[in-house]
Image (cartoon, rainbow, N blue to C red; front, side):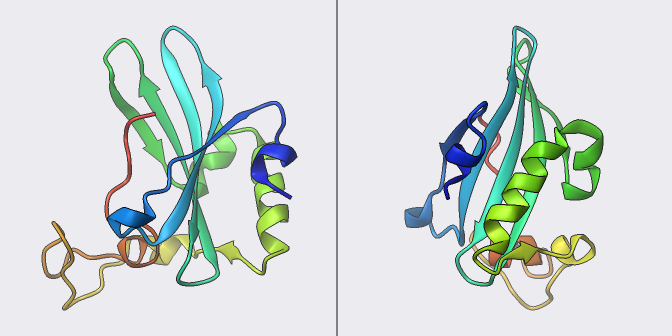
Length: 136
């Protein structure tokens, strides 16, 4: 079952850039678009390990910039729980689980990649992407 079929009331966009050495598929689930803000749940599904991560992103339309970004621990405050439950249900069918939040931004010493300097590289960089796309 695809994410779009599981969430027919939402627009789901695949913004994956595997040719740019990303290590995951990235799906943006658009949950609100209006004159002032665009709210998105971004789903990162690793192609290296059976883990996924979810971020909530708000873009301020008037200022044309990233306003807020919240990790999966904060999602229940901001996003519809229906989305999180359905995404988890789909990914569990493929034996994927949410990556432990406390490790997501833990730095891995002695690794540098692209613009990440030695000592700045994290598990999120390793298993998902080294830079979170900000444009929605």
